[in-house]
Length: 147
Image (cartoon, rainbow, N blue to C red):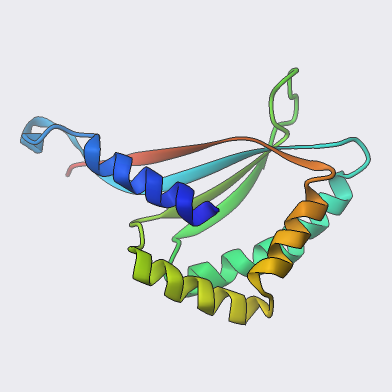
Protein backbone atom coordinates (compact mmCIF):
# COMPACT_ATOMS: atom_id res chain seq x y z
CA UNK A 1 0.00 0.00 0.00
CA UNK A 2 2.78 2.43 0.92
CA UNK A 3 4.58 1.54 -2.31
CA UNK A 4 1.50 2.50 -4.31
CA UNK A 5 1.36 5.88 -2.59
CA UNK A 6 5.05 6.44 -3.22
CA UNK A 7 4.69 5.44 -6.86
CA UNK A 8 1.79 7.87 -7.29
CA UNK A 9 3.80 10.59 -5.60
CA UNK A 10 6.75 9.87 -7.88
CA UNK A 11 4.54 10.20 -10.94
CA UNK A 12 3.21 13.51 -9.65
CA UNK A 13 6.71 14.73 -8.87
CA UNK A 14 7.69 14.17 -12.47
CA UNK A 15 4.63 16.05 -13.70
CA UNK A 16 5.01 18.99 -11.32
CA UNK A 17 8.58 20.00 -10.64
CA UNK A 18 9.45 22.18 -7.68
CA UNK A 19 11.63 24.50 -9.72
CA UNK A 20 11.20 25.83 -13.24
CA UNK A 21 13.35 24.51 -16.06
CA UNK A 22 15.54 27.63 -15.93
CA UNK A 23 16.61 26.95 -12.35
CA UNK A 24 19.83 28.94 -12.71
CA UNK A 25 18.16 31.99 -11.19
CA UNK A 26 16.91 30.11 -8.16
CA UNK A 27 19.01 30.31 -4.96
CA UNK A 28 17.97 26.78 -3.99
CA UNK A 29 18.18 23.24 -5.35
CA UNK A 30 15.77 20.37 -4.68
CA UNK A 31 16.84 18.24 -1.73
CA UNK A 32 15.54 15.07 -0.19
CA UNK A 33 11.93 13.94 0.05
CA UNK A 34 10.22 14.00 3.43
CA UNK A 35 7.20 11.77 4.03
CA UNK A 36 5.10 12.76 7.05
CA UNK A 37 2.43 10.46 8.50
CA UNK A 38 0.01 12.06 10.96
CA UNK A 39 -1.17 9.68 13.68
CA UNK A 40 -3.73 9.78 16.48
CA UNK A 41 -3.99 7.13 19.18
CA UNK A 42 -7.04 6.32 21.30
CA UNK A 43 -6.88 7.11 25.00
CA UNK A 44 -5.06 4.47 26.99
CA UNK A 45 -3.00 3.16 24.06
CA UNK A 46 -0.06 5.58 23.90
CA UNK A 47 2.34 3.21 25.67
CA UNK A 48 1.23 0.31 23.46
CA UNK A 49 1.87 2.41 20.35
CA UNK A 50 5.20 3.72 21.69
CA UNK A 51 6.29 0.12 22.24
CA UNK A 52 5.37 -0.72 18.64
CA UNK A 53 7.36 2.28 17.39
CA UNK A 54 10.36 1.36 19.57
CA UNK A 55 10.20 -2.26 18.40
CA UNK A 56 8.92 -3.30 15.01
CA UNK A 57 8.75 0.16 13.41
CA UNK A 58 12.24 1.16 14.51
CA UNK A 59 13.69 -2.18 13.44
CA UNK A 60 12.24 -1.72 9.95
CA UNK A 61 13.37 1.91 9.67
CA UNK A 62 16.89 1.06 10.84
CA UNK A 63 17.04 -1.70 8.25
CA UNK A 64 15.82 0.62 5.48
CA UNK A 65 18.45 3.17 6.51
CA UNK A 66 21.22 0.54 6.57
CA UNK A 67 20.23 -0.44 3.00
CA UNK A 68 20.37 3.19 1.81
CA UNK A 69 16.65 3.23 1.01
CA UNK A 70 16.06 6.12 3.43
CA UNK A 71 18.42 8.75 4.81
CA UNK A 72 16.74 9.10 8.19
CA UNK A 73 13.58 9.06 10.25
CA UNK A 74 12.17 10.59 13.40
CA UNK A 75 9.09 10.85 15.56
CA UNK A 76 7.65 14.19 16.60
CA UNK A 77 4.91 14.48 19.22
CA UNK A 78 2.35 17.24 19.40
CA UNK A 79 2.49 18.39 23.02
CA UNK A 80 -0.73 20.41 22.82
CA UNK A 81 -2.91 18.91 20.07
CA UNK A 82 -6.06 20.85 19.29
CA UNK A 83 -9.22 19.06 18.19
CA UNK A 84 -8.56 17.28 14.93
CA UNK A 85 -4.76 17.53 15.13
CA UNK A 86 -2.57 14.42 15.23
CA UNK A 87 -0.60 13.48 18.30
CA UNK A 88 2.34 11.94 16.44
CA UNK A 89 4.19 12.75 13.24
CA UNK A 90 6.26 9.92 11.76
CA UNK A 91 8.87 11.39 9.45
CA UNK A 92 10.91 9.47 6.88
CA UNK A 93 13.51 11.08 4.61
CA UNK A 94 14.80 9.70 1.31
CA UNK A 95 16.51 10.97 -1.82
CA UNK A 96 14.85 9.04 -4.63
CA UNK A 97 11.96 6.79 -5.48
CA UNK A 98 12.48 3.15 -6.40
CA UNK A 99 11.29 1.80 -9.74
CA UNK A 100 8.85 -1.17 -9.67
CA UNK A 101 11.58 -3.82 -9.94
CA UNK A 102 13.55 -2.21 -7.11
CA UNK A 103 10.38 -1.94 -4.99
CA UNK A 104 9.79 -5.66 -5.39
CA UNK A 105 13.40 -6.45 -4.49
CA UNK A 106 13.16 -4.21 -1.41
CA UNK A 107 9.87 -5.78 -0.32
CA UNK A 108 11.40 -9.26 -0.52
CA UNK A 109 14.52 -8.19 1.40
CA UNK A 110 12.46 -6.32 4.00
CA UNK A 111 10.08 -9.26 4.60
CA UNK A 112 13.04 -11.61 4.95
CA UNK A 113 14.79 -9.31 7.40
CA UNK A 114 11.63 -8.73 9.44
CA UNK A 115 10.89 -12.49 9.31
CA UNK A 116 7.34 -11.75 8.27
CA UNK A 117 5.06 -12.16 5.30
CA UNK A 118 2.94 -9.45 3.75
CA UNK A 119 -0.15 -11.18 5.19
CA UNK A 120 1.33 -11.16 8.70
CA UNK A 121 2.25 -7.49 8.43
CA UNK A 122 -1.26 -6.64 7.19
CA UNK A 123 -2.79 -8.54 10.12
CA UNK A 124 -0.56 -6.71 12.62
CA UNK A 125 -1.47 -3.38 11.02
CA UNK A 126 -5.14 -4.31 11.33
CA UNK A 127 -4.68 -4.95 15.04
CA UNK A 128 -3.04 -1.54 15.49
CA UNK A 129 -5.85 0.08 13.52
CA UNK A 130 -8.14 -0.68 16.47
CA UNK A 131 -6.45 2.13 18.43
CA UNK A 132 -4.05 3.87 15.99
CA UNK A 133 -5.43 6.09 13.24
CA UNK A 134 -3.67 7.51 10.20
CA UNK A 135 -5.12 11.00 9.91
CA UNK A 136 -3.23 11.90 6.77
CA UNK A 137 0.09 11.98 4.99
CA UNK A 138 2.16 14.58 3.25
CA UNK A 139 5.04 14.26 0.84
CA UNK A 140 7.32 17.27 1.08
CA UNK A 141 10.58 18.15 -0.58
CA UNK A 142 13.34 20.09 1.07
CA UNK A 143 15.28 22.82 -0.63
CA UNK A 144 18.96 23.37 -0.04
CA UNK A 145 20.78 26.64 -0.54
CA UNK A 146 23.08 27.00 -3.48
CA UNK A 147 26.57 27.95 -2.45
